[in-house]
Length: 470
Image (cartoon, rainbow, N blue to C red; front, side):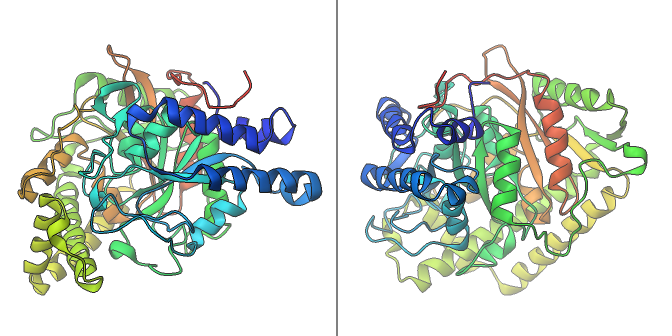
């Protein structure tokens, strides 16, 4: 592993480099890697000023500096979500101009309190509507591991920036796989937290009917665990905070799914990686419980319907409330907004009821198992242009996304936590990702299992972290 945010923070803390030097290295890496299209907006002055503030704090208030786990670490926010003061979010759309900037969200404040130094926004598809990050306004985001392929979406810019080493960690959001899919494409760790674990205030505590979560894409499980703990605080809402292994005698029942159905087949090398991950966990004394596509088929279909209706209605409402000129939007965005306006309230009500049943079915499944190991992507990252937005066929677009990541969206609809990490590479040196799901509030268990898999050393990052001493 060529370093992570924890390593960079430690180097800054011991004085191997200053925050300003780390920021300068990130800015230089951003310039070198500009063809990747990972960064949609960059403010070098903001980044350097923030880093210099941390350096001054290190000299004048070392006790305050010491409690910031990522003090001086450069990072990037996503051009969707937040907001972060001073960073003008456009959601990848011509409907907004890059000017001004709102006050920090609660989450943004926690990022800054953790010591992060922000200097830009990463590329997102328009309104996050795609599993590729190729907005019409540009830039087209490419995968650092193979620039002919997508870095995923909608947090593709974040994943590309982290995988390329421009930054060691980056803010990301996930409403239908948008943290996990880019992480899987780029060989990173991506956690979609339990619904409600991460603050959504002050302005949209139930954004997208609760299906959206914010956190980060990371180069290591330990970074993921640390940023989750820092951003979520100590409260997990109504859910217990379990020990990493808390079933009888420390023995977990590991649900194993290696079948994604005839309609959404997953390539053999990806299924083999999932099975290998489960066997690794089994080797620690845990029990494998085989699961079938029949256990998930209805939930996947219902989750897809809920996602389509929720994002469509949300987009239609946003355009109306903000009096936006919809004609400036991409054709696919306009089609989703039209779909939202045409949706009867009774249909939306039925969809939301189905979403509750998705959660119920997963709760029932977790009566049989303690966690589930399953595929994240059906294939290697697809070619640039595989998710075009210059058409109005929303059903076709949704089907393409489901075929690429069939087990992504239903985790958002259910509210359950899910994590992906790489567990090997294919014949083209692209990552073989594995996804793990657990019951509500069980992030510690996910992180513990992920750390066990990471320790196998089956994946190595291709690019070092900018500024990190060798």
